[in-house]
Length: 143
Image (cartoon, rainbow, N blue to C red; front, side):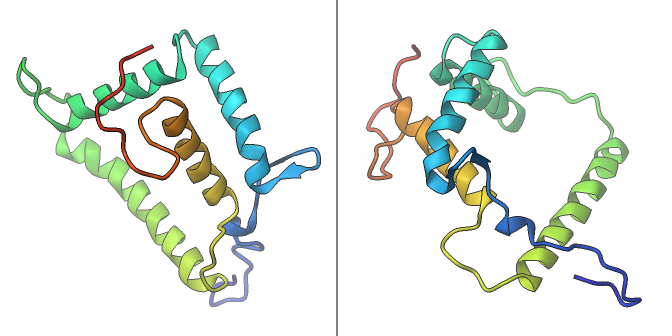
């Protein structure tokens, strides 16, 4: 991708990049990523993958919604938040440029597909999602 002055901005579409470990690549690297991720969260003091996912979901829910103890208050002003949103907006626009300017959509989007597959495998392993992509009937107990 080049700008109007001919300066190269992006040489390769980031959506064409994939993670690999040695000769292992594509969907085959996802179990390795999952194992590495589980080791990382245990090193950070979480008891299990399931507890990590539940803690993250609980934290986000508290930020987004009120709890029995009332709603959470934020210390940031709207001006502070807008500074962060400007960067996010900028990044989202670049993502749109890449998507629109890259090759036509296809089933696999490199690293994006690998991370979606990794998240899906985490949900399946913890019993939150079934292998057929349906949600479990009841929320599983924390391990």
